[in-house]
Image (cartoon, rainbow, N blue to C red; front, side, top):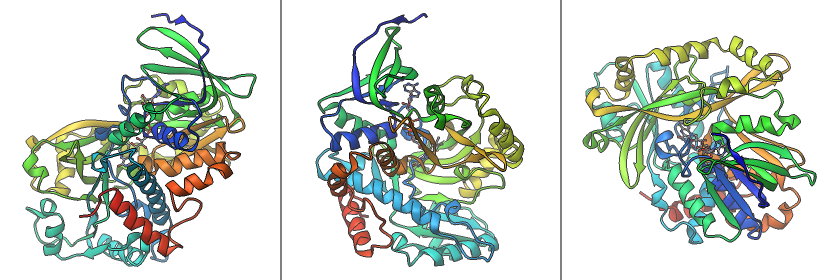
Length: 498
Ligand SMILES: Cc1cc2nc3c(=O)[nH]c(=O)nc-3n(C[C@H](O)[C@H](O)[C@H](O)COP(=O)(O)OP(=O)(O)OC[C@H]3O[C@@H](n4cnc5c(N)ncnc54)[C@H](O)[C@@H]3O)c2cc1C
């Protein structure tokens, strides 16, 4: 259908592209900091949180490095490097503080709608892996951010922590696990809805769903003209914005490329899709109460570490296993097969080819994952749940992640698994690329956007930011008293006791 062109005069201080947890978080932060600014949120689907932020499209782990072994690599001398784990935990504490503020100020009335306490565990088998886990525990256990972490190789203790995982397991293989009570399951879809609901109650906020952003061009005043298509009406709008946040998840890279800013050059994207096995038998699901993370296979990207996850969605416990990685050229779950080919430009093709050449182990891993049979998926599940029966589990398709490919002077191009905030044009535009540690760190990532794009407003906003996030501007690890206060406050406010 050819779209009719309708020019409108609508103009906002801030345009948020995408109805996921990132846009919702930035919108809420900005509305609390500067209530008189006008904000328009444009999402291409008919509701918010239908892509990666949806509860069933991700694993819902409140990533605090309590159980994810990829954040604690072993150094050449055998010691464990915990610096990344501390950073990831610090970032999650920032999110916890903002969410606690939202609860205490009545913006969110029932935190259990989106966050629930679920112990986090790491689980390995084999003597060498067990020894690594023991050393990891030694390195973390006295750190204030990891207080309460326990380690065991005793089958009786492991059975108490994870009965489903121990049931039907034959003796002989050495097993080891860590357990920590302060882990969480987060329903990022529910959180997105709560944040957007708050925004819709505020003056000068427009929610435009079923509206796809097609193009971005600089205007004479230093802001942007945003070309939007109303998908139901088939009309096109031209919207003005002083600042644009491209929070379009997998769809962020093509929009960033359309800005034409120098910072967008040379960046490519590599999509990795995911599938989970979801337990259909409530009796089996009720027999497990933890998020149990294992070790990644050789060549597997860090986010493909297998894990068995208790979920709490709409107040009901659920159980997920995975993710199994997959490959599709789509950048969004509800995207187009042309997404990847259309993102290849003269400025990024070199970096993309270099990444293809240098990541053969990843390529082999993805091919093996894509080709694997239901039997092979069940075998992987049985490493965690030896008694698993095929009829109790169904395969579901998770969200799409687009890993960032960047130019590299030595290698030509590198593949990154983290999150990247790209800003440009004097702070009038920011885009979020990548997906890890993901939604858990939505608040610190959006604070990075604020720091980079609103440096002039920061002095004015600082006291409000400190009211909402007491650790703002510093870290907790070096302030034990504040660390203890934040832990107690957020545990109480978010109802995470017990
Ligand atoms: C398999 C998997 C497991 C994960 N597990 C975890 C986990 O355990 N813990 C964790 O913290 N994170 C996890 N993540 C990451 C987390 O889901 C993402 O980081 C987060 O949801 C990204 O939010 P977002 O708002 O950037 O994107 P999304 O939620 O994907 O939202 C993007 C939005 O933009 C819209 N959009 C796209 N293009 C346009 C356009 N042109 N115009 C208008 N709207 C557009 C989309 O429709 C969508 O509404 C996981 C991700 C995956 C895929």
